[in-house]
Length: 129
Image 1 (spheres, rainbow, N blue to C red):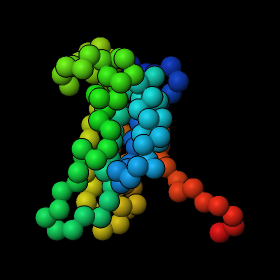
Image 2: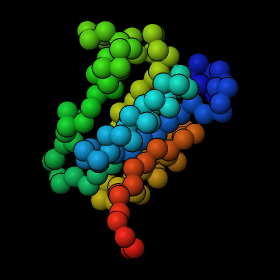
Image 3: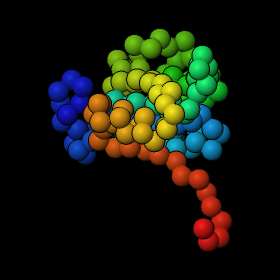
Image 4: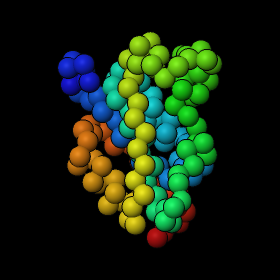
């Protein structure tokens, strides 16, 4: 079901992408956003990283949803947040999980929020572990 009560034809509408804002996660962000856009669903961008007391996440260190959609030619550069849903059918939510264990934090987020598809990055490895 999408946020407006419609069932997506492909069976998923809520895409969760946890990130620590590292540069290596940008391709995964792009894939997750494309999936949510194709689904005309809900995209959860979840910052999952241990933060020190009083430290805030730097959301500007990662590509923005609207700026990415603008770069793709889907939104005007001066589009307001409401146009993302009105024009593209995409809902977007940013969440910050300042947890001592980011994996546990993401699991709690997924447990409390609908998640049809979880898009995560993996560290590239060479050779045998």
